[in-house]
Image (cartoon, rainbow, N blue to C red; front, top):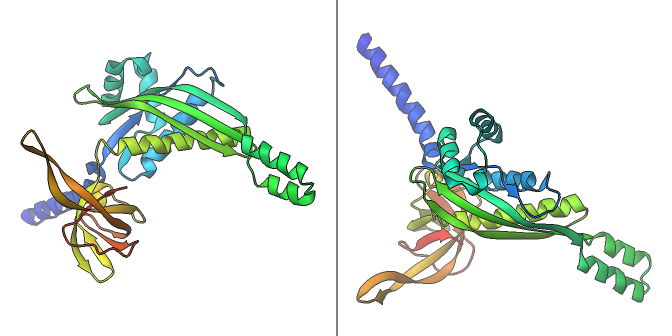
Length: 285
């Protein structure tokens, strides 16, 4: 009976571990409070940009994020200051939150202006004397355009090294000042996500092709999500520099869409007529 209990306990532990393995495989990012040096609406700019970064990183499915409330509690307890300019404090805060990476940064530019496209539409409608038709067209053109620029650094909390740094920008139009600015922040967050993917780039191989079904050898464990569109390339001849092979030439074959995701493999469907073969390389476009 005692042995059976031990076996049952071990089985339960293994089940819990297997359920959490996929989540544990994802890197955890702590998005620390941003600094706003743009001079535009200092109270809200950094907060909106921070929130859009959190949403973009989490929604990607490739990373998990530390809750803002958890970070806020640690900030209050530890009394951190100047996080945006002090990588050592970012590392310490990141470690306390359990994150692999800490993202620090500052908003260097922000603005919302009249959308020149909307003004041009109104002017043309007036010149052509379109009346109600002109008003109807004008209602579908956003009147404001938001712009934002974010300077950031991504710090590895284990080594303290800055593994990614740069500037991303966002620009979008909206129906109101707030709408335009939120959309611009979202656009900047999406552009940052493209750069973040370079830290842990997704790469897979076509394992098998069965009719319309294309099987690749990576799944949710690698952060893959159902509905994603991936790029398929075929490796060609090697690129040699100073007598050493530094890379392989890659020829783009086409794109595939993920229709079923499992832990360690996924099923995709071709989005083009090109022939995809076993062994082709799959990556995010």
